[in-house]
Image (tube, rainbow, N blue to C red; front, side, top):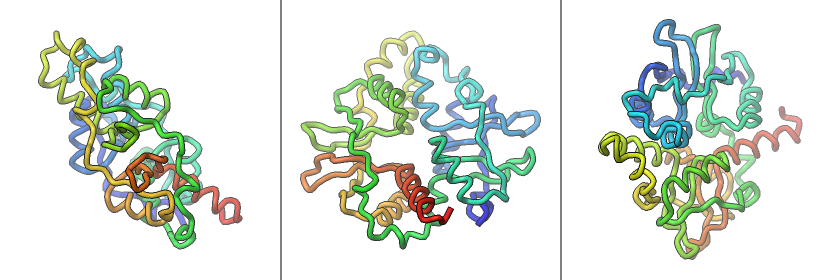
Length: 274
């Protein structure tokens, strides 16, 4: 099957001269985590910006003193964009995503953006029957990156950057008390920059704590839940990752959409389906 059969065709884009605040508003409104960036003159694709880009870059020492009104998409976007064509096979595009550790690929017909494919699109259209009996413990990440509610936000940001991840489990006394994502971080930092005078931002941004940003309403799963069930929950509730816990709410692992798609790709490749 070709990728044009499952790609999203109502594409939301951001101009490279718009601000990071504009991008975050678009992401929130349309419930998406990445935006193709286009030239304001030609409308051609010139980059892509993700929630993780915003979370890791706008609070960096390079940009922490830059006013939001001066922080354009062009300063934080990824310029070398991996793309696909409408006629490309699904497996070819999935391989690009898995190999390059990316969550979405713009689909181009010539220079025109005609679609966008994400991990969610693949999971939504997945034949889940082969994965009904496989427990998520087979693919979960056992080494979970965690933070404490009392850790500083800049510390959480550094862990995300160093480990190239977009979410951290928040634990206290070994138990899960929340989760903090790149989106949470980006929204809080942007809100902070809007309301705190510039001369105080440099010192005060380093005094933001995880507990001020994390979400306390989280959903976990168990290691014996099937991959198919977890995929369904992620799609229906718009999760990118889920902590794995036991009956005491102690963290045992974490599973992401990337983990599921990597397993699906390798499962089918080994059986000669790809």
